[in-house]
Length: 403
Ligand SMILES: Nc1ncnc2c1ncn2[C@@H]1O[C@H](COP(=O)(O)OP(=O)(O)OP(=O)(O)O)[C@@H](O)[C@H]1O
Ligand SMILES: [Mg+2]
Image 1 (cartoon, protein in one colour):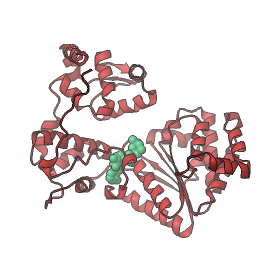
Image 2 (tube, helix red, strand yellow):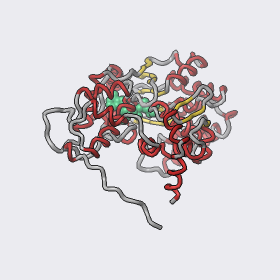
Image 3 (spheres, rainbow, N blue to C red):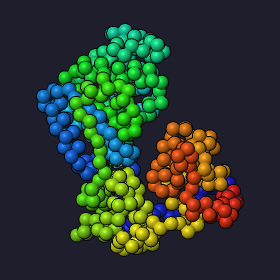
Image 4 (cartoon, rainbow, N blue to C red):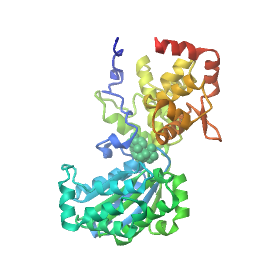
């Protein structure tokens, strides 16, 4: 065993930065969201809604709709934070299943106080109300799923808190459930919304494609929503602010220029390349900053950005640019399927990961320009990479990897 090869940690000292501040691409891992959040109109509206709920004990239901990486989770998290800070109970559930029984169970489990993940809480409840028995019975089979009764049990629980929030993230993940099960679940939510206690916010986040489908199938539910927020791409000014805020958190050397080491032109170009999508922009910033630090480019102007983002000159260079979480997928396509086209199911089997996750990651890779998707739902590498493979570069690299 040779062990892992260790590389010296990337240093951002040249720029007076303690680390690369564009690393976190999901809101999940960010604790002080305020310090990095760029406020858009939707945030002002959300703040007004939260004040209504806290100040007047209003009850409000809303949806947040936007493509991947547009800041949906970040918004739900800020609602959760506001409610929790006022002594309320916020239930945040990331929908990761199309099984409405499991999803409903996840919602009730999220009611448990965070520190005592023991069964005591649930046992007490069941003794007091026969609650668990009733709930468990309804969650054994979708034929037992009584939407109204479940909603009422949930209202009963939420009512105990001065304020509460029911936040469902990535609702698109249940789109593949059977239609009548989706109806049962939305019926449960509908009933919850019509009977929710005062001081309650119900909010869910969803990508537009799935949202349009849901609204078509269940107009009665969507008519109950007080607000529907559509997230929009970031403007150039907002991207400047994003960059400033993120850099500010890691600066160890003072500078007069809040976007240093980037120039305005560099940010302008990155805004354009990322099409205003915050996650895509952060990804580009992360890559450009780390490559620039290696070569000590200073400042990072639009010329540097172009050079760094230029088409890779070899298969190896292409592979090193792939975000590390997705690397195995691209390697599978290159080495096992000669660059594709290949379906996400085949890729998922090869890398032994859940199909849904692989599907999402492959689409993200398409968006980032690392893969090309076709009408039949297949994925392949871009033509210039295909050429590298045809030149036999894959064999060479595979040999290296095995050795
Ligand atoms: N308004 C904003 N200000 C600052 N950063 C933002 C903003 N919106 C999104 N981001 C950043 O963009 C990244 C993606 O945001 P987030 O995870 O909230 O998106 P999402 O819409 O939930 O994505 P997904 O659909 O993939 O779950 C995060 O790193 C987040 O910090
Ligand atoms: Mg999200």
